[in-house]
Image (cartoon, rainbow, N blue to C red; front, side):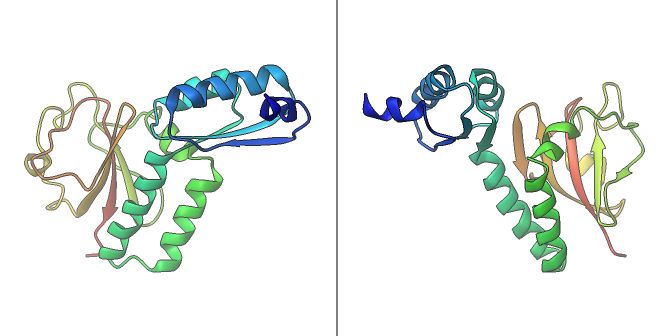
Length: 181
């Protein structure tokens, strides 16, 4: 296979195909053929990130994040957040290698306190036994508390701008936009 012979001399490899199994095989084989190659792999799903890293990818870009970032950007525009601030926030997410979304669920927040991550954004983690656990967004009353819910991060899933009927579960992490009023 001429393609894989070239891999032994390559400095960088980008794997951007839609076949999950093939992406895994190519990543693994490329790493075995060339331990020094820098591998960037695109995947459709967040849960593939760890697998591809373990197989040898240096960077893994999940489509779900890019889609979520774009949706998040548009929601912020609807709330009239200045474009410059949106771009800055998105640049920060991308420059951190998406670590912001990955590490958010590892942080511990009090079940009643809101932790400010910027002047406009608030993160809230639903803890086991907290008053929000098992309640819908409507029942929690975030709007009345001056916050608009933008994103829920649950396990490896991201729910953009969830409905008011969405039920919060322990370990959910919410990203909210603080009201200007």
